[in-house]
Image (cartoon, rainbow, N blue to C red; front, side, top):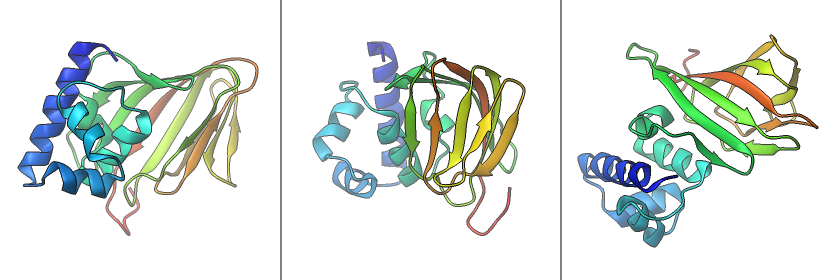
Length: 176
């Protein structure tokens, strides 16, 4: 992530934390990250992983897209790049992303907030995706929707996969 994006994320993260009246220690503890790492992030330093950003979004109770909306470059790590395309303003909130997974990638994703669903449409390549133990194989033009409030994965083989992903946020016990 470039320095402008890191600074933007840091200021946005700090504003959201302070709006809740939380200390650095409180948010770091809730998100399961070191206080020093959170401090560096808020100062526009560090190299946050997608998992770290997801954990912070979950603890701040904001959609991932809300946390990264000010960032215009793709976020990525370990062969996966994600870019926010648009954020819905209605209820339930729906975020749309472009995602690319490099060849021979296995990306394990942590559970999102309760009631969250993901819908994937494969544009190119081959992709296995879904909750651990209940994945679906996708080829170009195919799509799948699954509950993302439990651990899930994305796996490619010899070619890269490009897809559109929508995340629909719901409340616990609600089906979006």
